[in-house]
Length: 124
Image (cartoon, rainbow, N blue to C red; front, side, top):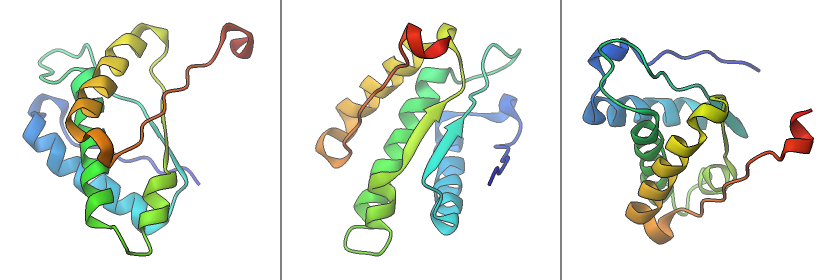
C-alpha cells in the first residue's frame, strides 16, 4: 500500500507545528499498522523554516513519545518494529544523520535507533 500524506504548507512549518503534524502522522500509521515508512522531507524551498535535520529529530522524538505512551498496549510491538526510510539521496544524508544524533541525545534509552546506509555496491 502507498499512502501519500501532505503536512500542509511548508511556509507554515515550525518545530511546534511539525510536532503536532507528526503526532497525527504516527496515529495514522498506527491505525494502518504499516511496518515501514518512507519519508521525503521538503528542503531548499523559498520561505521554508525547518531543515531536514530538525524534521528528522522532531519525528523521532514523536515516535519515542508514542512508544512511551503505548507501553503495555497492543501497539507497543508495532512501533518498536517500525522501519523508517528517507528518500533524500546522498546530498541530505549528513543533515539527516545530525537530526538522528540530536534525537538520540533527547530520547536516550526510550528509543533504539539503528542507522543503515546502503553501500556503493547496493546502489548499482
